[in-house]
Length: 570
Image 1: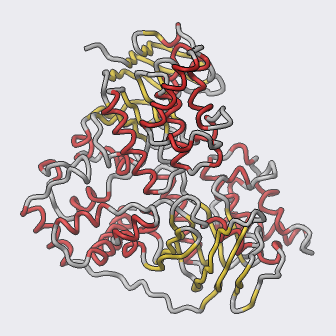
Image 2 (image 1 turned 180 degrees about the horizontal axis):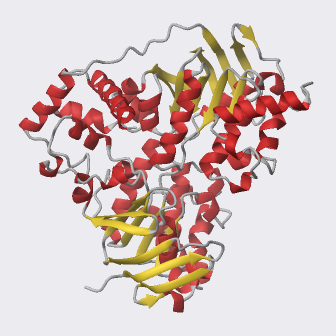
């Protein structure tokens, strides 16, 4: 069988870069295969995808060597239009892909370019919409849909043209856990129904492996490190070695002394089949563990009572939200897209005005405090640092919040330098922000909040889009701030983050708090997981299969043990 995608001794160097991003790539992908391409940020995996869909060389220019052949056509001799009839691409941000005013118009875009007759077009649009279960939203504007619905529209827009290859670039990046799980199930269903070749680019491999893939391609530094079956790659130490988080159930098996090379169904928690000897090893490991004390007896620093919020249109977003946060806590706020998590934090910080209820900081009501006044107590860090940064230089960005406060220039300099040292940015104090990585920019935004001396910092999706190495870097930094006495509240879709770094989670559904418990208790409650669009942890599945009576305690013991092991490894 001839490959449908073939790279032969292929290298690519962007025009603006000194070194090639892709180096000596040789890879064959065959019709009907489902491939997962993974790697840390900067490994070259997205660049490889852009070579498949024609963005390279027709939109993103540079020097190419070797051959990239897609469906029998050499990409350098083709056009982006010709390749678009063979490769359908779904981007990680669906908003950047929409062109129509309605769902139906957006799905029709490719057919309109092909000058398809209107009656035939309507038929194909409806068929594509039904395949992704979005046919009931045809008259809606794409921007009015939820994250998962937007992704379904994007999928319909590429399968409507009967492409042979579907390319998904970071499909889970902006989705809540349950929607991400549904997206993986939908991709798998489309693969089976259409026999399309599917290429998924993603670093969250446990979530992708919810449904089986044929092969995994591991990349690092622009090269293919491994091209193996999932079970082969998972049994090796290559993922951890190259900055990719391995599935939690796999780490657990290794800690328990299970020989994963002999374990059946290791490639997915859905396929995992433990024999009696393996179960005994896990139960014995669990029996030897001691759970750490996670209680917090500090005073309450932040509190809301019966907090309501409605937009001028009358749509009520928050309904009687009551909770309290103790000093020194590291807490997560989780729930489905649109549940009201970000709105709650904006109301607390004063960016939106509550329509009912009260907010207290250290026992004092702050409903009428200005945004500036609240910023000295409660800092807010957006998901995308580029939306917060307004200055060209790092020093100026961090100093901006404390200018016009009566401090002298020398006092400002002293405070900024002290904050930059805390954030690990002092050596870059005279650098332009444009020279920083995404993770470093994130630290600059945190520094710009920290310099104002808040006792509470709220972060919206602090690790979104980060590979495991950068995720760990950001979270360990936040943990160090927390250990210095700063209370941390994080809005997140990352269930690993909730388990590993927080002691408590607020679970939101439809503007209401439906649970206030530990992350392990939340993710071992199947009813709550389904209600709040979360995703159960694979550790829970292992606990059930081993007959462990207290899965919550089991998960807590794993998290404590894993934390100690990683600290020891460092």
